[in-house]
Length: 91
Image (cartoon, rainbow, N blue to C red; front, side, top):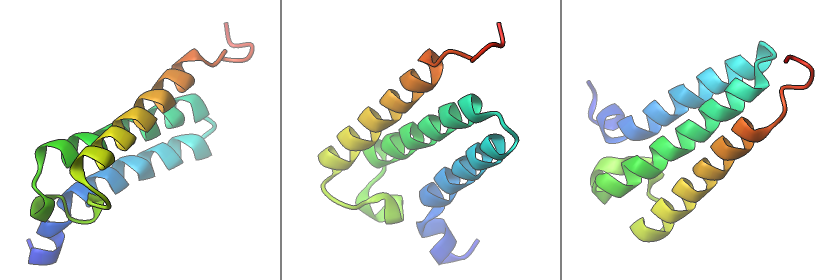
């Protein structure tokens, strides 16, 4: 594995989960896609919380506490909103 990929592995993992969310949305599974997108944001927050600045790569934008709080809050809100939306006629 190249040094550049290894340095940005957390960001690559988050992008893979976001790509899965995008595919779900394109297949008209938008509630699942929104949930997976929220999980990707939670994953980014967890990576930012437990990894050092050198290990986290491009996920480090501001201070660790700000990044973690922002990502975990936004991720949780997205997951809760996706779970609370009425399935619109499917039961």
